[in-house]
Length: 380
Image (cartoon, rainbow, N blue to C red; front, side, top):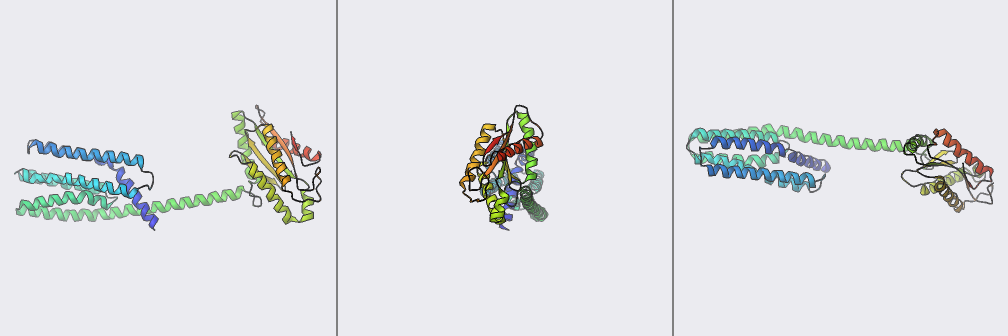
């Protein structure tokens, strides 16, 4: 609930600043029109002074807006920026409200009520523009209308008092009109916030489901289905960029005999340890380690030549040997521990067959490694 309220504040502040260009253009035009109407009616020094204050306030708001969009990212100091905006809007409201002083500078009632009408119209536009935040409406509206009411009441005549009363009634009507709009906008922001949370949650679920569908449950490596998807893409990329691509096939030696001797639980534990060794070494972002099936593992190495692939394969083979997992029924060369046989296929220089072909070459090299006594590495 607290996060939701904070999000509403963030969106309101961003929406307020987003109105800056429109309010500057609208304010500049309407204030210029009023100055043209009053030109020659009151002393020019008053008009020029007031117009200068308006232009200064509008320029300050534009500068503030530019600083805001450059410096504020997300939630950083958002409440402080909201407070600055309210203060700036309040000062602008005071300047706009100062037009009601025409009542004391000109003896013509027609110009008095022209200014009143102008302020009422400006206030209506302001309420509409700032309805996303009632605080912003109050910041603009309250100083402007307060000065107008004081000016009308100080005029003393019954007509002006009635006009002041009408302005007060109109003010309440405008607020009553604005509040439902403000509530609707706040509810829209809350709904959007909840929808975004739900979308993010669903994305997480989808990501997790994708991981589960592409990951082998026992070893934590990618599964064969995902491997088939990736190798097709990587072969196409290697062909486009004319780079090498290597595939390492790994088979745990005499694994059936190991399971028969030590049990399937020990076999699963061994498969996990060998897989962990593989994933620790095959760790580049572009590389892929996967369980191909049973005790067979694969490593796909984009942009890797046969020498580097052989060095990695040997590192994997030696580290598996260093795990020192006893295997009394091992048929590997001079080894009483769990070992692996490795076959490597490397393609490059526009020699890019279908994925079945590179898999065939790596599997053929693996077969030769086993024929040569196991616990070794052969390059196709």
